[in-house]
Amino acid sequence: MTASDESDRAFMQVALEEARTAFDRGEVPVGAVLVVDGAVVARAGNRTITNCDPTAHAEIVALREAAKVTRNYRLLGGTLYVTIEPCVMCAGAMIQARVDRLVYGADDPKGGAVRSCFSIFEHPQINHRVEVAHGLLADDAAALLKSFFAQRR
Image (cartoon, rainbow, N blue to C red; front, side, top):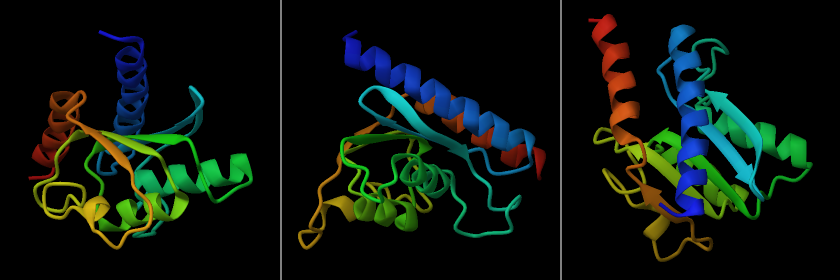
């Protein structure tokens, strides 16, 4: 395992912690962490129910916080770690923020916008490319989601 693999794994563990916290709040357990130059700039879990805001996905909350912390809406050099494949809204926000890289865990066959349902980042007219790595700790992320939805049925 390389140093970058180890750091990716460590940051995804932080995203999973955020997902577990969201789970405990009664939110769909998705976590996100924005890292720039090896340091966590922002971390968040889903807050759609808590904030009564359909846009308060973990990715959006983390991007908003990172923009405030860096005092720049462009998050150049940033890597976003997310427990599940982002939706169209979140993928679009990453393009607007100019995030360099996305690392996510489990695919989302019902709404994933990176490779499962759509391939937003690959559209030829998009003017910013996001490097993507998928499947990191996917089993852990998927198990958390399954547990959450099993409790609600």
